[in-house]
Length: 78
Image 1 (cartoon, rainbow, N blue to C red):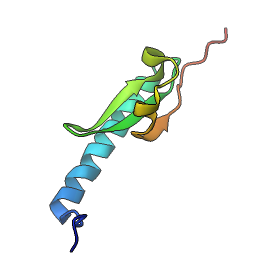
Image 2: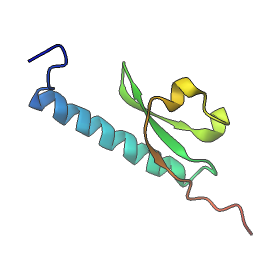
Image 3: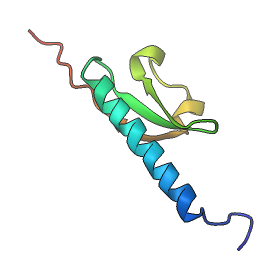
Image 4: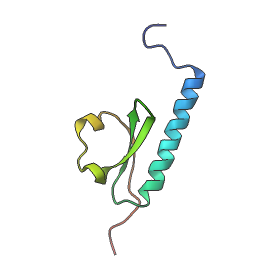
């Protein structure tokens, strides 16, 4: 294989589990925020979740790392 060798089965499973955990976190947070939750790649943790409301318009360096988004579940209408 070349320099971009395929991940081992163990590495892929760990990556998949990290992504599932991040997605579950984003879904849970979406019920308590008026803003979208973004899942980003992170070199140290695998994935992180950030709230769009903490950043306003996401800077390009963060947008480049977005792998998924969960829309807010809160409605601002009464």
